[in-house]
Each structure stands twice: as C-alpha cells, then as structure tokens.
Length: 379
Image 1 (cartoon, one colour):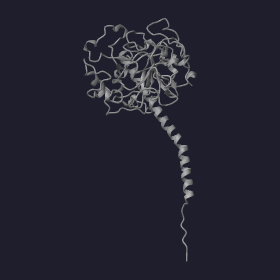
Image 2 (spheres, rainbow, N blue to C red):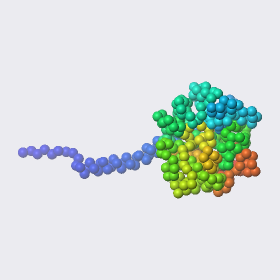
Image 3 (spheres, rainbow, N blue to C red):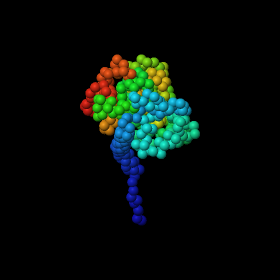
Image 4 (cartoon, helix red, strand yellow):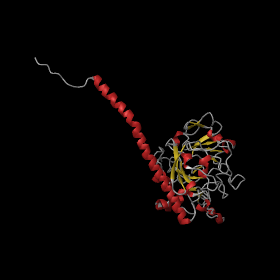
C-alpha cells in the first residue's frame, strides 16, 4: 500500500515566519512614521510660508502690516471708529490678523460673510446661530502634524470653531504685552490695535519674526486642571506676577511635555492657543520669543499678560516665518538666554530699547532692539 506524504509548513515553521514578519514590521514602522512626519512637517512649513506671503501682500496693498487684533467692538455700533489714526490705530476688538488677510488667502467669500455683519459684529466666542465663518476650517491655517480638529457637532466655542496653528509674534515683552492702548506695548512685529510699518522693523526683515507655530489641544473634552493637558495648546493661569514676570517661574511648571501637577496647584490650566482662527486676543493668537519652543505658556491672571510659547507636535521644535518670508525651523535647544532675567518693557519704558536678555531667540522676535543673532545659534 502506497502512503501519501503531505507537504506543508509545520506549526513551528509558521511561528518562525510570523515572528520574522513581526520583526521586519517593527523595524520598518518607525521609518514609515518618520517619513510621514517629514511630509507633514514640510506641508506645515509651506503653510506658514503662505501665511507670511499673505501678510506681506496685505502690507504691499495697504502700506502697513495688519494689526494683531482689530475690528469694531462686538455688539457695539458706537465703537466702529477710532480717532487716533496717526499711529496706525484701528478699532479695538478681537479679530485676528488672519481675518484681515483673508482676501490675500483667496478667501474673499468668507471675508465678505464677516464684513456683512456690520455694524453688529459677531464676537469671536459667539457660537449661537452657527455663524458659518467661525465654523469654517481653513486648511492653510492648519499644520497636518496637529491631531486636534474642529468638531462640527460641538456647540461650545473651542471645539466647535476652526483652528489655527500659526500666530503673530509679539516679541519679548511680558508685562502688559496684551495692552492694546499704547503703540509700544510690545517689541514685536505685531500687537493689538496698532498696524506697524515694515520700516519699523529696523533690525531687518531677515532678522525679525512675523509668525510662529502653535499647537492645539486635541479636544476641550479632555477637561482642564493639573496633569490633564500637554504643553501644546494649554496655558497656566499662574496666579501672581512673579510667576511670569521672570519667565523662569513659568518654565518651572514643565514636566516633559506636560504641566507638572505639583507646581500648578495654585492656579489653573485652560485651553487657549490656536482654538479659534479668527480670535486675535493675545491669549489665543500670539507667540513671544522668550522661552524656547515647546515650553509652557503662562498668565499673570486669567485673560491678562504673560508668556506665550511657540509649540508644535513635531517634537524637536517649531516653525517661524521672518519678515522676508524666509521659513526656519527653530529647535527646542535654541539659545534662549537667561529666563531668570526680567523681560524688557514695552510702552517706551526705561528698559524698552535694551537688547533682549533671551539670547538669539529673543533677538529674533524684537523689531528694533538692535540685537544680533546668527544661524549657528539655531543649529
């Protein structure tokens, strides 16, 4: 009688093959993820360059940069105009510079929708009636590396609005950096209510940052409070001037990519940066060149002045675009000077014209302090 022998793999052989495949996948996966992040980072760089170009095109048309925060007061038709036009002052409100440059971004229809609200402008936090412009996510304003996204079903004013990953640079001032009532409230290219000229950037357009990258929290549903939020997108209400007047007090609350629960018990953490593309309030739409990228952001008190750090989900740094539209990737290790030193003053104070104490990073953010930096400081 002839016996038939079946050919095939034994169980051991199959297990060995599966193990080899698993090892290969494990070796290849980081490389694939790195390649994807490199592509996302390049897209992010291109987006901030497009935003820089939009700002410069606006300046070419109007001979001024857009104000960091502008527009008539919400629901107040009597505050549409401001008489102090000789210093470039515009109506006070919360509209970001991105609202101003919508036509330069080929978003004319969206711009017109916003303008038709005159004289009663929609406040930037108003979600009632599902105001379409605030619910619109503009793709160019987003960095693909950021996992946060608009939730179209949300009726609150953070998750339910379009986000932004780029913000105006306010320089290296801390105290009263949010003030919009003085033309020298800060030392950066932008500030609230005042539209600066490129000629005011006497440090040179190639050496002055226009916009910087900011990350957003994945969702407001994460809640607030110690231990819940990453550095990216969240702020610490520091409950006292000394915690932020000398930026080292803000730096100390960092623990890896989180806020240290043991250090923030006397304040609160809250969602802020980048959660509303149209909101030009200092807390929502600014960076300062004080603490290095991916450092904490802190306030003296809720809605007051403080430190707004650049941030990203790239891990090692964040993008900025200079006033000559040159984009650079600034590493977390950038020379940022001494955070224990008090920040320079705005409002033409006694320290308003001193070089930045925050190294090359600080010098990049100032428009006219006469401080220098070179490429070796960011390599």
